[in-house]
Length: 79
Image (cartoon, rainbow, N blue to C red; front, side, top):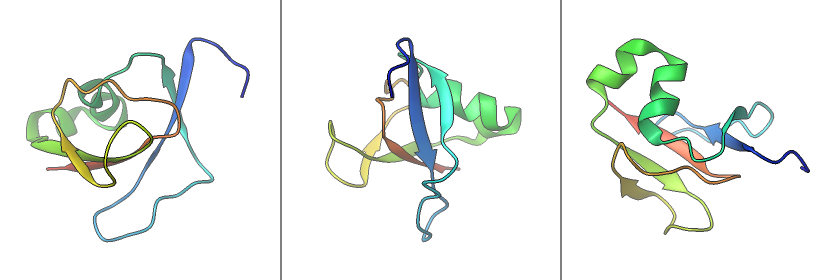
């Protein structure tokens, strides 16, 4: 991708396939909680955990709010 300092992550709804055409472009090192806040402020209060599909985790691994997202991760926010 060539842009340092940013990360592309994709979101998916529970039981659905991720939308790989519309990534969120976020600062490098951004956490699950910070992404949830960017999507909608109410998500942060209701967020229980997230599931991640990516290179650094098992597919569908549950992670906490402080998990640092990596480029290419697919995120399912669970509220």
